[in-house]
Length: 59
Image (cartoon, rainbow, N blue to C red):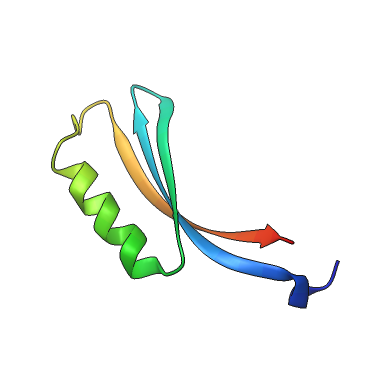
């Protein structure tokens, strides 16, 4: 598969007590980071985590 056949998206990931709870995909990094900020306001920073990762989607 060539690079031209792949689309880049950004995934915001919410992890609670070591388990992935929610993943949302976005077309740009800024939107994914906004979602991450919303989640961070409501999580327990001692046990939970959020993150933003770039992904390739194969067609």
